[in-house]
Image (cartoon, rainbow, N blue to C red; front, side, top):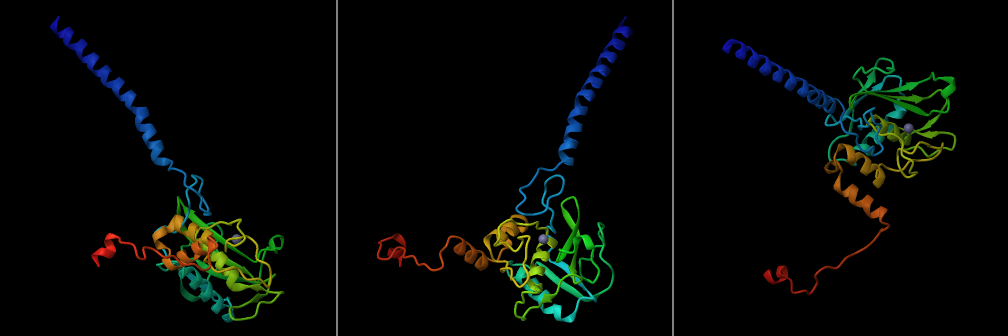
Length: 260
Ligand SMILES: [Zn+2]
């Protein structure tokens, strides 16, 4: 009798354990789901992955670019100028050219981990209106590669230091835009943005100094990485104040002036 009672107890205990395990399974499963699907983020004009997270280089700036050996020498000053325009907005280096005579061909859709600027004499005939194109490859929310192609089949370019030419595309302006894509930025519908989609021949894009571009950059790479003087100038421009002054505390018997 006692033995039978013991067995009954054992059965009850083990079925209780089974029920507990069954109850716990969905909990474990839902925890796994939460880990798999990260929270969506605001775009801030960045390209987003399918989980709506911004894709970028995160903490691995500067983006280290190679310049392909087919890029003509006269284009170098435009490349340097576009690089320094991006670097001037930040307290850290954003883009760096590490090689000027790189070999290879543009990658299509896979990451060779070597961001490269190409100068192409061949271009798809159904895309002949493209002045340039940047292909960014990421896994999760981390950019692994970015290649820039310049369309020298269908366009002529003016270079840094040249006068603007109504028949030519200003290369510095085009590169400022393409480097923006390489950093993870998409297009911005605001015409003052360097990420505005259109660039007419003989026209210059503005500097990377407008508040809209600084805010986009700061949203992803950190507000504290924006050069404070550049940010202050952009904020002042945005608020319409080109000049101004303020007088504070003159003649007031504040504790600060009393302590003097
Ligand atoms: Zn673009």
